[in-house]
Amino acid sequence: MFGKKTPLAWLQIKRESNRLAVALAGIAFADILMFMQLGFQDSLYQSNVRFHSSLNGDIVLIHSKSSALLSMQKFSRRRLYKARNLKEVDSVYPIYLDFTSWKNPINGIPRNLLVIGINPKNQILNLSGLRENLSKTQLPNVVLYDRSSRKEYGPIAAIFKQGKLVKAEVGRKLIKVGGLFNLGTSFGADGSLITSDVNFLRIFTNRQSGLIDIGLIKVKPGYNANLVVDKLRKYLSNDVKILTKNEYIEFEKNFWARSTAIGFIFTLGTIMGFIVGIVIVYQILYTEVADHLTEYATLKAIGYTQKYLLIVILQEALILALLGYIPGVIFSLFLYEGARNATLLPIFMSFIRAFTVLILTIIMCFFSGSIAVRKLKYADPADIF
Image (tube, rainbow, N blue to C red; front, side):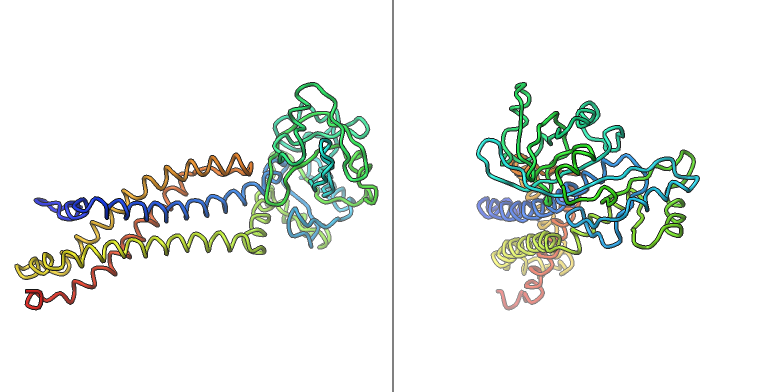
């Protein structure tokens, strides 16, 4: 990118060290804004599909009016069992979901959490700690506690690991924690419990066993789940929505992206960071051009074209973009760690996001440079001298 003889762009940038430091700080700030907005947006999607991703099955049935895990509608369990009539279906599993209050056993403060009810004889959720503890939920009023739940529920995991008995009030039922598993928090649920379907119905006394929230289907080996979904859609009534596991994950993500303000807010925040970066870089490059207008006019007088000067400014923009990106990405890594520890959300740096912000930074700086260089178009050597 530099000229063959004199790296004019680099020499001009490093000439004013204070101005360079301000420019790099501004670009890093814009990058941090974009990194944080994109990071929170991605963690929102990932945290809200942890449960969906853990399902050990191929096809999911939900009520046709269900819009997300937060607002599930119940449907008849007979729909799920009817699916067993298809030769391609290997097994079916009903799942109960609902929210109720958990009373902190230390300070008595209630807080809502998600309760999941499944048959303890079926390992239909791939979650750490679940396989070895699920059988304990066959005992009356025994639940498994998500060790990644927020601290507002109390130091349950720490007390349990000390070998002490943990009891708490869930809804209006006194339960006992029989083990720990790991699911994690989300924007919809700060904590969760897993118990047997029988214990679930004991906690939610107003629920009927014949009405479920999710139906999970395993397809026999050798059959294509997509083809089985098409067949089920023709076979079952239209009061249920039939999705592959991947479609169910995308269904949840789309709800948060399109049906809530959260997705829009994070996207707007990313755009604002991009615009802030454009303004900052433009101010720096415009000042650079204005301060060296005499030198640029001299170059034009001795035969250098407007195109050459544009290339020099764009070289400066590229250098600023690359140098400003480095502290931006490094500082964002520290912020990700802090946000992850504070919120328990899965906020991690990904290669795709790092590359995306790098490209946005370069475009941002190039756009600013293209605007700033317009001042040179009207720089007449005769007027300057």
